Length: 476
Ligand code: SF4
Image (tube, rainbow, N blue to C red; front, top):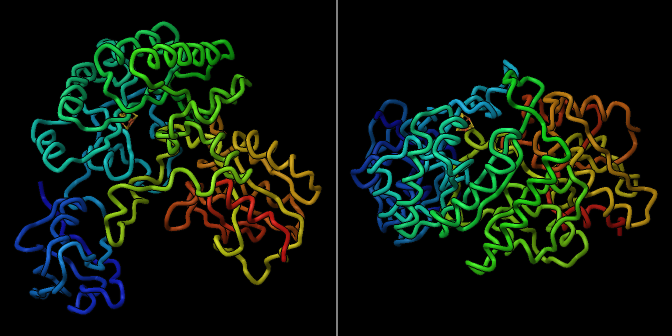
C-alpha cells in the first residue's frame, strides 16, 4: 500500500523540531530511516532521542537531525492520522447513517472507515470484517488498546444480515482473539427494531456473557434515522420496543453484576428519553466508560451543572495525551456522532474565558438574557436543570433538526441551516450559547456552514455542565 509522507502543519515555537529548522509545509519522508504508516508509528519513532528526518521541502530533499531527549515532544503537528490509506468497510449496513446523508456534503463525511487504527485513535467503531492476522499482531505488539468493536448481534446469521456481509458473523473470531491477548475492547450494539431488538437482543447479551465476558463494556444504542433513509426495513422504535430494550438491558445488568461483578451493558440515554423512564443513578454507570457514545451523558451533565463534579467527564485521554501536538481528527470523526448515532443529551455552554466568540463586535453584554442552544434531546436534559435556577433571563432553545429529520435529536448533529432558521426568530440583543460538539475542529457544521453564517452572534462553548454553569453566572 502506498504511503504518503506526513506533511507538517505547524511547528511549536522553541520546540526541538523548530530549533532544528523544521517548518510548516515540510514533508517528512522518513524518520530514522523508517517510513511511518500512521501517527501511531510516527509517535513511536519521534519519541526516541535525537531523531533524523528525511525532509522534502519544495521538491528538494533535506536531511535534518533533531537533538532531543527520549520522550521529549518533537513539537510537530502533522496533517493526518493515517499516512497510507484509511481502511474502508466492505459492509452495507441498512442502518448506516452515511447512506442517509444528502448529496453534496463534505467528501470526508462519506468515508466508510473500518480501520482498527481509527478505533484506537478516535474511538470509531470497527466491525473487524477486514481485520487480518497481521493487524492482530500489530495491535498486540504495540498494545493498541482500547479498541471499539461493533457487535450488533452474536448470532452468526443476524450479524451477517445486519452488515450485509457473508463474513460478518465469522469476523467475531477476531474479537475473541483480541480479548485472548488482553486487549481492552468496548462493544456496541446498534439496535434496529424488528431486526436485532427483543429476543435477538436478549440472545446477543447472553452470547456476550458466554463468549466475550472480558469485554470492558457494551453500549446499546438506537439506530440513527434521517429523512434520507431509503431502506424500508429501517424505522423508528415504537414506545413498546424502546421499553423492551431498556427492560432487556437492565435485566442483563443484574445478571452481569451477579456473575462478573459489574454491569457491563448500558442503554443509551436516548432510550431513557424515548421512554420517559428515569436515568439510572450515576453510580450505575461504573465510571462512565462509554460517555462519548451517549451513555450516561445526562447524569454527568447533571453532576457537572450542580457542582457535584469538579471536572468534565469524557475528556479524551490515552494515546493523544502522549502526542505532543495531535493530528486534526476532523476528517475521520466529523460524522462520529451520526455514525454512532449518539452524542446523547449533549447541550452546552461555557464561560466567557472558555469559549470562542463569533461576531465579537456585535456580542451582547454579559448581563443580557441568555438563550442556550441545544438539540431536542439535549433540551430534555438541560431544560429541567436550567429551570431549577429559577431565572427568567435564561431559556433553553431546542433546535429541531429539520436538515436530517428522522430521529436526529442529538446536539452533535445540529446544522447551521437549522440554527439559521431558529436564531432568525430570536431577539438580536440576547446572548446565545452554542455547544462546540456540533462543530468540527475546523469550525464547520455538518452542512458546511460556520458560525459566521448565523444571523446572531453566538458564543461557542465547551459541551459540559461545568461550563454551562459558569457561562450563566452573572457578570461580576
Ligand atoms: S455502519 Fe459502519 S460498518 Fe456499516 S456500512 Fe456503515 S460504515 Fe460500514
